[in-house]
Length: 291
Image (cartoon, rainbow, N blue to C red; front, side, top):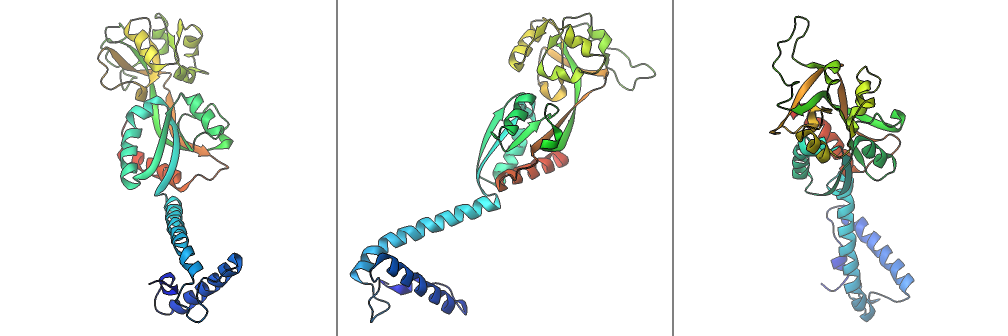
């Protein structure tokens, strides 16, 4: 139908009010353009100028509808982009399961994932580079962030399986499980890595001060460990579950945990897709994850 009728839609009692609104819009458009779109005596017949405008108006309506659908999708969390920074141990062990579930629910949301150390993750959040952070946030002012604890990740000792520290020892009467004390580590070369800052303000801090090597990259760290250049401490999540040459041993004294959580800026509203990921991550860990 080449006329006004194709611009009218709706049903029941709403048709009359919708038609009135369309007529007003047409009059306003004709006033702006300085030309009539419909013949004066036949409101359903387009003028030659109206015929010329019709394809452009239809194109505009198609674009408008697509934009409206996209905005509604973004508001509902169904579309858009989220940027997440995480410590590497979570990228390899926790995040994949959460991302699988999130992608099933929100297949049209683009996810940008960045792995960094705990300090880098926090700094990226403060700089506005990302929407959400996963890791330990002890390096930044707690008042600036909204932190939700996900996992308490125990700190242990990593060494070669052949190392003398990895000897079967029965727990004493006062011990409920087998593990090491920090004094037992003093006789071996110590390799400092980023997570060793968790030893600060404990008696084991002396290990950091006497470290023979300092390594930030996890790949380099494991290379030194496998070549028997020393031992180190690591959170349990940072240790590969299928590692053939190395072993992770409980550190009982001091007993330390890395508090791993998801956090965002406290004074900034995140997008609906990011909020949906935030809620799903917390829910998934509570219901499925066992360290």
